[in-house]
Length: 385
Image 1: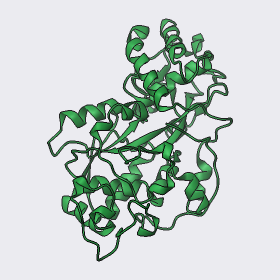
Image 2 (image 1 turned 90 degrees about the horizontal axis):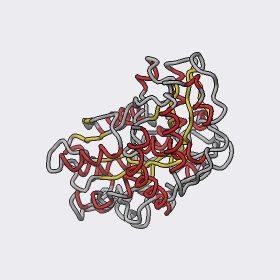
Image 3 (image 1 turned 120 degrees about the vertical axis):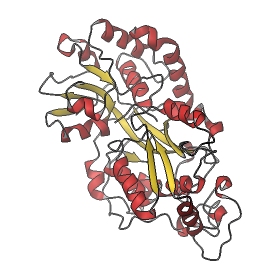
Image 4 (image 1 turned 135 degrees about the vertical axis):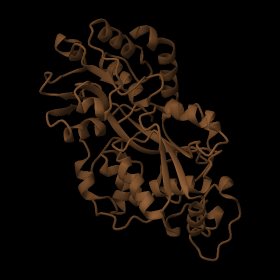
C-alpha cells in the first residue's frame, strides 16, 4: 500500500456477472466516436506520431499502437506497489501480453512525488510515462498531461474524466480503519481512537499534504467529528488531539509495517486494509457508519513521456475488460463497473469479494478536493508538530 493518490463517485454496489474470458485490449467495436475509425483495422494508416495521438485510431488502430509500443520496448510506471489495487498482477499481465519491460520506480511514493519525478526527470529516459494520482494532485497539474481517449471512452461518465482525456478516473475505494484485533480493542467509532488503548498505535498511509489516501483519511475523521466535504478542519483538529494524546504514530503505514506490527491501527482504503489479513490473520477492517467517504484515483499520461506509445497502450489495457477485472480482483471498484455489469463481463468471483459498504458514501467534488488540499498545506504541519 502506499500513500498516494486519488472524484466523483457513485455509491458502491456489488453485483455478479460473467467472467471476461480473455486478457484482450479493447477492440474496434468498443471505441468511442472519437476513436472509432480504423481502430484495429489492418489497412489503417497512422495519421500522427505516438506522442501526439489522442486515440488508438489516430495512430492507425490498435495493431499500429501495439507495434509502436513494442518498438519502444519499455514502460516507466511510478508509485504502484504490487499490493495496491492489484498492480502486481496488472503489471505482470501487461508484460505477458505485450512483451514490454516495465520499469517500476518508487512504489511507495505519493501522488505529489509522482509529479515531482515527472518534472525533475523531464527529458530523460527515466521519466514516468504514466501516473496514477489522487484527484487533488491531478487537478493541480493538468497542463503536464497528454490528452488521450481510450477505446472504451464511451463507458466512462463525463464526470469521471477530463473532456479531452488528460485524466480519467480508474478505480475507487472507501476509507476505513484497519486494526490488529490481537493488539487493540475493536474501534466502534473514530472517537475511540483517542482512548489510551490506542496510544502510539494509530497511523495514516502517508502525508495528507501529498498523499490522497491520507487526505481522505483526515477527511473521514473530519466528517465523523461533524465536519463536511467542504470542511476538513475538524479532521485536522482531531489529529491534533490524537497527537497530543500520544496516539498518533507518525509512520507511513505500508504492508511491511502492518506485517511487522509497527502500525497496528491504520486509517486507509478498505481494499488495502482488507488485504492485510493475508499477512496478519487477526487483522480486521471497519468503515465508521457516520463517516463513509469514497474516492476515485485517476490515470494520466506524461505529455513528455519517453515511451509515448507504451503509455497509451497501458491506458488501453487498464480500461479494457481485462484490466478493469484485475482492479476488481484487487478489491477496488473499477470505473467501468456499471457498463461491464450490464454487458456481463465482470469477474463474478472478484465482484463478490469486494469489501461491502453500507449507506451512501460522501464524495468530494473537484473544488472540495482542491480546498481540502489547500487547508492541509496551510495547517497540517503545525497541528501535529
